[in-house]
Length: 96
Image (cartoon, rainbow, N blue to C red; front, side, top):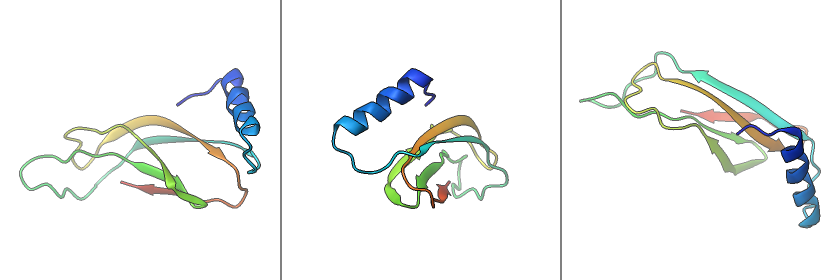
């Protein structure tokens, strides 16, 4: 998800008018390139692979790449994910 300046302001303005009390710090822009030497759990064919990201302060809100059908051991994602950050001490978690 790519946001231009106007969209970023609109998202920020919408959160402020809906009574959201969390402070807005900015956006975390993450590029998911690829995975190498992934253990293949499928016996008969290549596995379908996706990556799931979350921020430690809100693990229930997740952001996922698209599914790479028959991705196998070396899937290429090449996807950009944008996450809204509201706390300064945050860690990005990734699951494949």
